[in-house]
Each structure stands twice: as C-alpha cells, then as structure tokens.
Length: 240
Length: 124
Image (cartoon, rainbow over the protein chains, first blue to last red):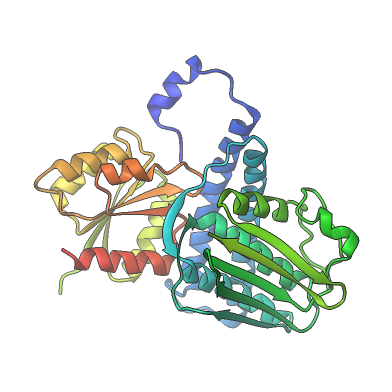
C-alpha cells in the first residue's frame, strides 16, 4: 500500500526519517506483497480454485509456512527495534484467546505430527475473553510453541490454559532437550542462542524470546521459564 | 435467494483480487474500488450489503469515507469493516467515532472474516 498522495507531497517538508521509520517503511513494503502471496497460496490450499493432490497440498503448505516464517522474522525485527526505541504501541482489543490458540494448533499440529510428537491443548474454558494486542500475543505464543516443537525430539508438547487470581496463564510444556541452568539468565536477552536443534531446522536469530518478553511486559503480564536439562522446559505467560 | 453484495475498497489491487476470489467462492457477489472517491460513488450506486474498507486510500481515506457514509441517511445502515495492514497504527477510537462496525487487520483469517460478514449482514 503506497502512502497517500498528500503525505507524499508534504514529504519534502518533513525532517529526515529515523532508522526506525525507514525500517518500518521497508517492513511495510515487504509485508504487503507477502500478504498477497500468502492469500494466493491459501486460495489453492483451501481448495477454493479446485482439487489438489496430496503432493501439491504438501508443497503449498510448505510454501505458506515459509511465507509465515519470513513474516515472523520481519515482525520480530521491527518489534525489537520498536522496543529498543521505546516506541512500541500495542493495539489492545477484546477477543477470545481460544481463537488464537485454535489457530496456533491448526498451524503447528502438522509440524508436531511430522516430528512424531504428541501435541495437545488443555483449557479450563472453551472461550477466554482477554484484552490484548491479538497479533502480537499470537506471535508470542507461536514463538513458544514453535520453540517447544523445535527443541523436542520425542514425547509431547502441551499448551495448558489456567485461570489465575488476576487473569489467565498459558503454559507451554515440552519433553525436549531442556535448558542448562547457566543459560537460564540469558534466555530472554536478544541475540542469544543455545542448544542444538534435533533433526536440523530453522535456527533463527535469537530475538524471538527477547521480543516475547518485551511484549508481555508491556501488557502488564509476565513470562518465565522452568527447565530440567534432558527432561524438558515449561514457559509460562501470564496476562492480567 | 439473491447473493449478498460486498464492496471491497482497497488500493492494493492484487490483494483485492485474491480476496474477491475467496468471497465469491463463499457465495457473495463482490464489487471492488481502488480509491475512496470511487468507493463512495459505488456505495451510492450499488448499495452493497457490507463494505470492507481499507484505512489508507487515495482521494478519500478510510476513516473519512466511513464518517461520510455513516452520516448519509441512504447509506448509514450498511455495515463497514475497517481494515488496516498488520503493521499500521490502527486508531480504533477514531474508527469507533466515525461509526465503523468492526475492525480487521490484514491478512485476514478467512474463517474469522467469514463469520463476521455473516453476522453483520444478518443484522440488517
């Protein structure tokens, strides 16, 4: 989407753009066509344009998953810059947290199946009304579930939603490689990476958890981890 | 039963095209306009059952167009979903003030959008 005409005309009078503004502009310009690519793939995957065979379906799902991956990287980098510049503004709206959980389940179930992992969601309620930045919260929870699947070779990944005295807790528990005690303090710091990915895969940039913490903190919630090396990890997100 | 008519007003032409394919597959008649003024003309001429309105548009922006339509006795009952790109700052207060019926961030989650369209077009 291009800036409106009036913005463009008044552009010459504006002060030079900051690095963050430039970053936001580039991100926006990349994400718009990426959105079109994703929706185009979805039209075929959802069989709206006709039947597909199993192999075509598999390839297109891979394509769509990787479009999401690019989008997630852009979003994380932008959010990291915004958090650093203290310019993150949340879009808080009321919504049902379970719709986000169901989307995440739909997205990760095939990955868990392919990895031979059991994946389940346990919730105290079918609907959980919350007021939060939906896109960003979905991104945080996807990050945690994605990490859990990535670092678990066998066993299970479980998302458990519980009511707390002040709000709701979402815990993501895995039976994966776990986190060494000496790495725990660095867990939510940016550009930190440790552990190996069983079976190979997306390594990432080590910013996902830093961004997740920044976003949950801004919501007035908390994010923390518990782990037993070799036994698994649990990440707990609480929202007020 | 006649098909319900949805008007998409979005200057991202190819996005509007893929959205059109999906909504047509869901059984809607879809009209498209690529700028605010054309959108306004089409609403007045076609009286759609629902409008999906992007906030950032040439000629008349989405908020202003929404305000104009909600003040027009002929068009005020048409539900309007205001839409922004995922990284745009969405001014929901302004959106509510200009009378938008709902807000969506692109790219749409198809099921959620469809449920909302059904709900908003049923009310009328």
